[in-house]
Amino acid sequence: MKPYALTTFSAEGLPAAPGLVIDGRVAAIAELCGSADEYAGLRGRDTVLAILDAWELCLPLLERLAQGASGDAGWRPLETVRVHAPVERPRQVFCTGANYRKHVVDLTVDSGVGPEGLQGAELRRWAEQMMDERAAHGEPYVFTKPVSAIAGPYDDLILPRNTAQPDWELELAVVIGRGGRTIPRARALEHVAGYMIANDISARDLIPRTDYKMLGTDWLRAKGQPGFLPLGPWLVPARFVADPHRLRMRLTVSGRVMQDETTADMIFGIERQIEYISQYCELLPGDVICTGSPAGNGTHYNRFLQDGDVMEAEIEGLGRQSVVCRADRDC
Image 1 (cartoon, rainbow, N blue to C red):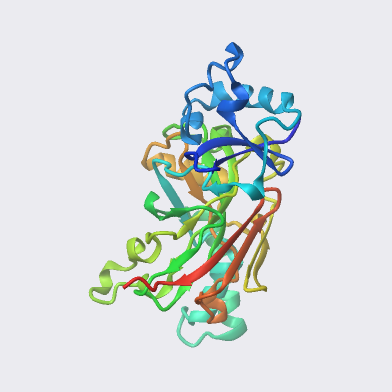
Image 2 (image 1 turned 45 degrees about the vertical axis):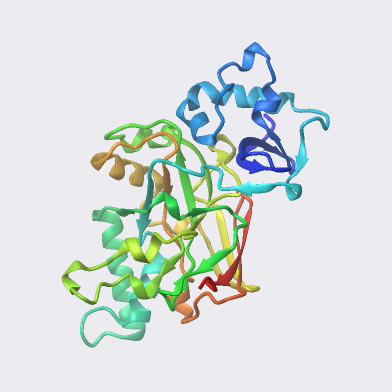
């Protein structure tokens, strides 16, 4: 089967449209379908979300399109088009926090949070034992992120004036193809359409509420600002990702490697996250689940995003993002 991916793109002043990506080129799905009756199920689906709404119908049609792709008609080099977030406006975005073992252990040690008197290697051992206990007996920690935070994989990130600590969080994003409630863990991956790259930008200094500490964390202001969720460049169907729990992840900031890990360090796997989320709400086609970020965030280095920084983020088999950070100079 010829590998392919989905994205949303625009070119030559035309409106954004769903596209098929093969070998560094993209073509509008509507143009590839033409008027052939065999592709009637795809016709009129003018967004990737609309395709995901009928994923089980559309998937074999997309495969047929990919297998029949030939010649140059309708195909454009990816570097000649604007690539948007593959799913520009999903109905729901979920984020699983504190879900990479080394990341949480590092945060514990860096912030010195633990039993009184523990520090250094002893504090690290305590944190590692806590994470092992959580993996064995705990459950995921999930919150939502507004869809207005979504940006494309090559869009500039405008750094808000209201934070001095904008931070990066490279994450594997799961895209739901079949919705449901109370989805059992053993069948959870049957509900996954595919995977893509996400960067869960976070304003670290806006996470804790200081006016009334009992409120705890404030994810709206810390993670919900415009541009705080670059997605893509494309959505890779699940059948082309052999094991989503064995993918290499790497993020650099202005050439310096900050995150270099694999998805194997997740505390709660994708199946467990889907099971947990669907216990409390209905998952819908096109929903995005950001599955957590590995060690190496700005808090670990005490180094945060600045004007002119370039974030390069990649996950094995899912492409690469390149985001330039710009100071907010709007008066």
